[in-house]
Figure 1 (cartoon, rainbow, N blue to C red):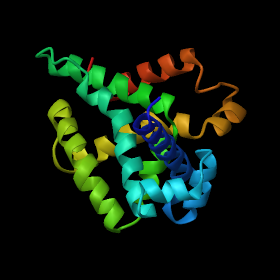
Figure 2: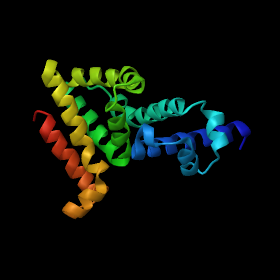
Figure 3: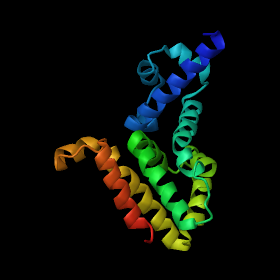
Length: 192
């Protein structure tokens, strides 16, 4: 492996660790030391790759939306909005099942009226919201409430997996539970 490949692999490990730590502790509770430990690297390598915790947070946000992106971008348009919307929604639920930390990361950012939240909205959420409007066809308050209802319904069960297992006896990471949840979300939010 070349040095450049090693640097890129280390950087990727740091970003993945940052997503996990920011999701668990929020921006204010996270430290680059905790992120370095999670990435099994040194503090010096974190600061080599990222000049500040904010720069690392933005790289983590880019990574989060790289995880969610295929749900929106990989659906081949069929010309049938309903079918395309169902496929996007299916991919979104499955992405959240595979990466429950994403929900915590986004919720933490959305709770604060600061530069990070504004950047996240402008850079990542607004373009996705526009795509949502195209597939949903709603407008105004209905569009806003539907968007957040879908976000919560698609994510919550996976982000509180320990609670779900204890409360219901079902593991949200079980493929049968994921499939059942996908079907429920599709029934709730798409017209049959």
